[in-house]
Image (tube, rainbow, N blue to C red):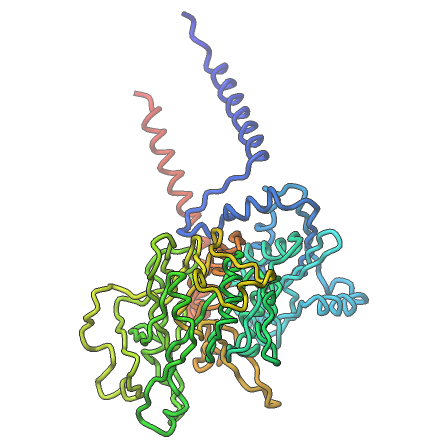
Length: 576
């Protein structure tokens, strides 16, 4: 058999390679793929995002990014990341996503008008400090985007606006949040209707200022309002909750009467979602300013029997935990670094509600116990660490517990449970609290429309009413201003800014989305990783050395590999 010539084989090999390249390009154009080796797939779109891009967008989305021009390397990194992220969107949405970068300072005559328009959209400039050869220069940048979808428009602010300098840490955070910010804006533009959420009033619940931060977060996705079941004349409105899909009962301090309980019960039977954030015990912190020791006091809310029927009990106790947050002492206004009655919860399970979410701060929380019907599924969504202690209802509270070598959790824990739950998610068909005992007033009232059992429904019971309460500060004009739920106002960072420490807002927003069936954003909120920045001092001192190293070592490696290859081929093909 005649062998094919080497020339023919070489031509065949080249044709095969060309054919493979063509096939790979055809497949690449048809289907996007990326190899992401990070632990949490930070550089890959989530499955929910891909599904949204492929199935939820029915018009062209036009994106204008106002970050064009010459920038320092860390800002250029943000610009490149934005471009790569949108190109990844295009891989799934195709021609339905279009974008362009705009330099707002390119046309000096139109720059002022354009910037005014951006400010009206809610976009504000950021400032960066450039250091080159001993000189410093402050530069204004517009790190934001405008998204157009039909007649609707939405703005995204990538970096914090205001009169303070943007750091590489801000850019790192912005890059991690790109997918979330874009998809959130897409969702707000494409979603035709929003669910209605109400905060209950009439029982001393959290005020609008105390719940300002969580209301602001929820308003990004839902219509948020307040509601009272009984008006100022003492008359209840049996249909007061009908237009709301979710009801938040946040830290009531006054008891519910049976008529109000009936309205809430029937709201649950008809499919309404209820979030119970309950304090059965509290501590008079202000009294610690004048007394070394104070006692806890109880709230009589008259809802224990109702919650028991649904499958949960908020116990009359306090949870202390070795993982705890700080408190400002009322007697000397010094910061106590660890106040053990302010647990910082990092859930032991891997629930998507708390995955990669910062610790969740609890203030004087109580354990929540699963009770009642076995037909109700009860899932722990918040729990203590393994270093906890449950304190009784009648307990003496003193700042001294953190001094003189004594702490309330130093003694051995006698409780056999490794951890204790502080929040439960209840799912199933709930039985009415009023089964067999409907209030006489409603027996013959056709408008009452009494239901004995619900269809499949959900509710949440949390043993802390302060979980969504934001701290309040004071402005220069003496006005109360709320802090975000993520901040700890009494702790400052190296820039004298309030410290970001908590994940209460993200957790509760995740929980709301889970309850309302809007789960496509939950996985994106948790994509926050530890900032790993270069050592600025090392860069300043040894910049030239590292530049030389990075330039020469790759060249040396290429030369060495070339010599090794030459030596191997020389030995292989040398004449013998």
